[in-house]
Amino acid sequence: MTGTAPALLARAHALLNAPEGATAGNSARLAAVLTRQAVEELIDARCAELCRVPIVAGSARAKLAVLKSLDATTYGAVLIDAWHQLTVFCHHHAYALSPTVAEVRAQCDAVRTGVEVLADTGGRAR
Image (cartoon, rainbow, N blue to C red; front, top):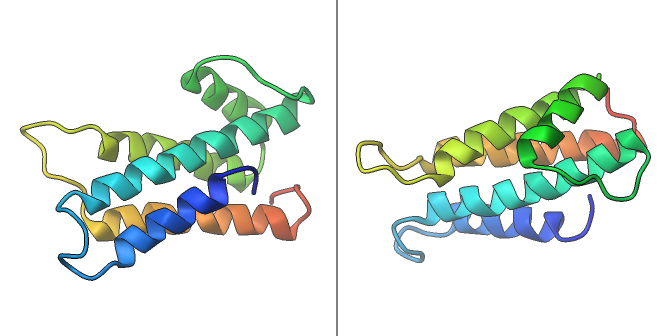
């Protein structure tokens, strides 16, 4: 993992695993925000690796398009799916229920698993 992504994922897991009442009522949404920040950092790193340039400028959607077109691994698909799902979790709407801890935990686990696969294969995800 790069930069602060591990710390963000660790903090998100800590929020999700905190005892009931230890955090505010929106701990699942806060964990989703932290996980999405980690995913965005991982997307930046993956795009830079795929494009062979240190910094890839552009919107998140542009970077997702780069991943979709250049990354033939399952890691790219995991990042794309996680970004979309976490974006839905992060936005608060009066007519929608907040994400559950289980929903956010599933996304956190998917991102962590994808990152571990990438680390195990030396940057070449399957």
